[in-house]
Length: 526
Image (cartoon, helix red, strand yellow):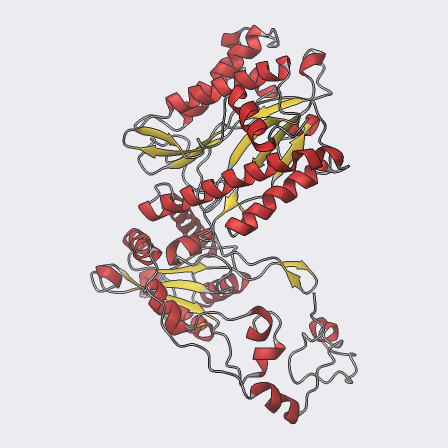
């Protein structure tokens, strides 16, 4: 990665570092000339950037409706929703940028757009805001400097020379049907007239812990105007909760994005099966599997929705096994839990447990079938009007019945399923379902009564993912079960007529999995 010249223009590399801030000392390695002649040469003879305005994006109208819903929830209050800054990976290298999901949901901006941007919903008289709402929304962001500016070639984080072109304010405004402003105006926008509501000030709600600069601006304003910080924190928490709950029901555009993410993920699973012969021959075969899926994720989507779990053998009994350093051995099972994140930032989340050599052993098939039966029971329970928690109860009841039939439960089935029992959780310790969307565990800040105790409603997207995990070191089970971990996970769309399995293109029945793998490998594989 070539980043020798990251120092800002004007820094003299011959200056002594003594007394300089650490950031300046770190930039003393720059060898870029600082003369006026060099600056003039770098700034001149560039073609003009395109000023053509893009068409309005399909997401724009949906994002506007989401903002209106938030506006209706918090009339009269200033709402501050940051995208978040770059996150440092190591020294002067950053992770690929991804905005906060709440920000992306309200603006429609996905991919790596506009680090440090902040969406501000400014309260106005009722009925005079955007689309007749209670607020006017403005997106504050850092526009790329002109090519006659030193930042164009000198700033490795924000300069076009280094990171490529980004849309201008006018282009963002046209694409998103959203007012824009320079990030330099943000402080005034946040702090003007702020204060205690009871004495005429404008109250602020902030999506906290996303951008420390935004936190500092709001907190300083609150301190200076006598706002009770403890009460303000509680108000901020309600905003985060509301933004999370807003995503519980997906609109038509979001469902399209989920379908695209699932389709790309299915392609990734095909790629993994193709890679298994090489994975078996590699000392870190799980990395071969991980890499095969990642290639498809980057080719067809934006990135991974989360770190891939490529767990073979006993590693499959570790729920969040993301080291992926193990071997992939014929005769073992491979638990692959992976999802592609689309360019819109919506992600799939699918798990299949595959026989590495293409055929399940008798005991593997027995455990697999028990998990599949549990998944089917969860699917049958997922009906409009029923509670979200009923999916889990239906699935674990089937698992507990199997564990009881195999003689593994230390108590009766009734005692195990009682609230004070739950002995089956030794082998199925996680929940069966979670909401899915922009975050792999979407809507996580939603109130319990709307999430776990919520009613299944048309437009919800969630997973069904029971499993059984028998660790090598688990002496409470017969040896034949040890080292077997099985999870089956599908992505479900709730419709008015019942659940639809978005990931049904991936086979689930054991015989179908075997046939699918054989079809990918073809007759040439021994």
